[in-house]
Image 1 (tube, rainbow, N blue to C red):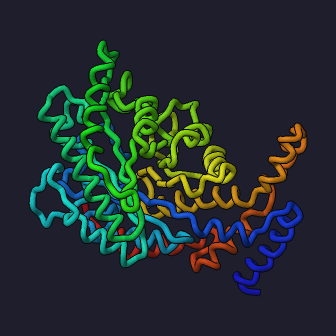
Image 2 (cartoon, rainbow, N blue to C red):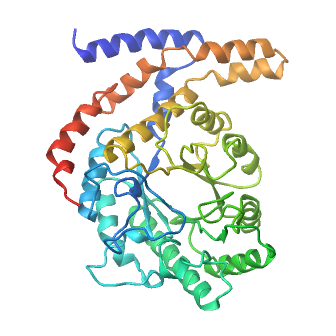
Image 3 (cartoon, rainbow, N blue to C red):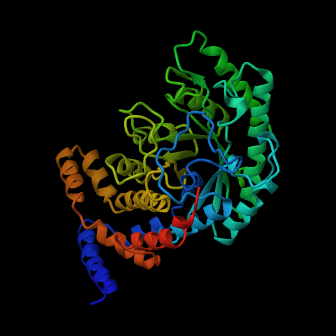
Length: 423
């Protein structure tokens, strides 16, 4: 009996087990196949971008590790992404940062970037059937060295970053229009103080003014969805972050734009799964940056953790699949970078599969009837249901390796391609 035969046989047994709970596995697979995850480009090159050979220059961003084979050019990065995507079931998206512009070697300031500097990315995405999302790069720049960008008291610096934000919206809209799917264009800034400030109000007043200027031009939401991303603390801004969660929550509600919830941007004991239903009570849509913080916002590769499962469960249980844009945000330079993409994205999809395989209606009825015993018992029994058999079957249907077979392809790609890169 071939591997495919084995997978089909174990799937059939799993299908029957789930059917006993009232779960249609075929419908669950169909729902999963329609969910697009936005893969972040910066995992492939350690958040270096293409502005200079030196890479990052501060701004509270740090990739650790020295695993060989990082992408050094846009073509290498795109090739690595293609390999990763070939090992991930489903049709997904690319999340790009402004510092990945291709300028033909010409120095272009960030407030002067235009859609044409991303034309190769857009054409590549169109060829590969991908949607795109975009981010302003408000860090690793001489005009960010003070620790303040959109909230800077220096009017020249503040205006520079406002112009960058405006340029990013134009680029995002061009991406959305060319690819036929709205581009979520996100704003995150590292602004804040390392130690306790006296004036917390002033920087936030300036940030609001800057955001108002960036979002002044109305864009067609068919092509562009604006998003703002808060944070509790960062490297060099441990005591005060201007763009806090509360600040951006209020701004997003007031201005009807997306709020980005990043799994690593809160207190270590906080989780974003518990925030999803709260913010979607007041917002039409949200953006998630799914990451894994270990003691701090360390952006470890996403694994199938309890919190990842809880995030997926909240999205599915609340019927939010059409209102939540799921993006990944991690970077680990200590392991194979293509493998990191594959591990993280497949784990996000596994969590979503577990969620769509849940007999939610039955659990909800037990809860509504006050039968908390049944609720707890069923939730625990679900943990040992054969979801792995359904996952392997889904992978084979999508023509990607089941189980850990994908790792063989990554190792072969490493031997043939990435291990040959120097520098």
